[in-house]
Every structure is written in structure tokens, then in C-alpha cells.
Amino acid sequence: AQSVTQLDSHVSVSEGTPVLLRCNYSSSYSPSLFWYVQHPNKGLQLLLKYTSAATLVKGINGFEAEFKKSETSFHLTKPSAHMSDAAEYFCVVILTGGGNKLTFGTGTQLKVEL
Amino acid sequence: ETGVTQSPTHLIKTRGQQVTLRCSSQSGHNTVSWYQQALGQGPQFIFQYYREEENGRGNFPPRFSGLQFPNYSSELNVNALELDDSALYLCASSLVSMNTEAFFGQGTRLTVV
Image (cartoon, rainbow over all chains, first blue to last red; front, side):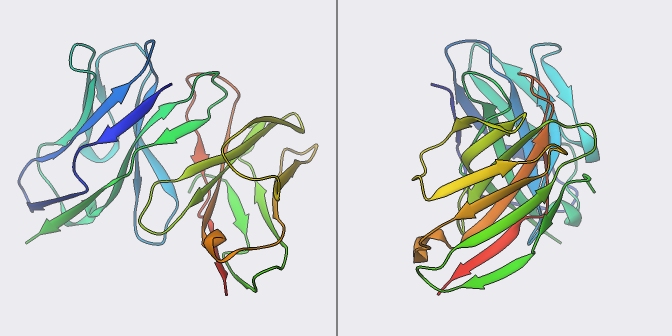
């Protein structure tokens, strides 16, 4: 069965410094992977998706993620954090059988400090 | 904005009562999924509807049920509410396919007292 593990429950960075949010996946075949962001009291917004095309995926707001099969990782990065990036980030995999049934990681709370 | 709308935004119910949550999917999307997000946790898949039929279910008891209508909108019904049902309920619409993303509504915050 597919699953994702987010390695950090909380990450704190200074504004203008790089962001790294870590995600490892477990899948018996090549997965479809996503990163979603959730701002306080808001729904979920798609940041980017990997669907077996290019391994380096660019998303919205300057975020990108690299699919590394050898490491079973899909880490999310951004070169320079902005205060507005403070939110909860979820790494997500599609369940076996497709149909867009999503399995979420436990989330990483990103804090951006001045 | 994703085009997925949910109502109501907030709701308070008493233990043992029943509740109905509603979701209008994004135009052109034929699949609706429901997720439960407890405080401090990631969303958990409840079930999915495609062409008005249940198309997969997560680890939730039968008192969680749903409907999808011909216009692809959907309802989530929960009977015999328990305190642990307090959560943010998220609706997501998509086109049925392995690789297309889901678009989420803002959610309904349900509090059971």
C-alpha cells in the first residue's frame, strides 16, 4: 500500500532563507505525488504534482520538488522564504486503484520568522 | 478560489444528532471525495462518489454515508454523532483519473458537543 512520511512536524526558517520540507514515500509502483498547502482556517491548495514526467517539478509561489526514486523521496524546496509561506504543508500520494483517492502525510508546519 | 463550495462553513451539533454537509463540485468535474481532518492531523479519506455511486471508501463506519446528484454535487451525512466526529470536513472534486489533482473546498468545521 502507498503511504507518505513527512519527516518534520515543524520547520522554522528566517525570511529570505531556503525552505526544505522532507517527504518519503512508500509505493509498490511509480506513484503520483503532490504537495498541498493549507493556510489557517482555509482549504487545501495544490502547490505541485509529480506524475512520472520530469523528476524536477515546479509549482506555484516559487516552490519546487524533486522526485528521487533511489531515495524514495519527494522533498519540497523554495530558495527564499516569505512571510506568506507560513502554513501547513502536506505531502500526498494517490491510493492504489486510482480515482484520485488521496493519502496525506501528517503535515509539516512551516514558521517563517523576520 | 477552486470553484468548489461547501456549506455550511461552521456547524455545532449535539452528540447523537445527525448532520448533512453539502458540496458543489468544480464545473466539469464528475468525481467528489470527502475527507475528515481532525485538529492537528492530515485529512483522512472518507469516501468518493463517481457518477452517483460510491467509488471507494476509507476506514469509516456506516453511519458516515453520502450521495452524489446528477449535477455532481454531493452530500455527506453522519448519523449518531460522536464527540470524536468534531473535525474539518473537506470536499474535493476532480476528474476520475489516476493523475489529475483534486480541488478542495474551504471545508465545514463541525463541532459536536
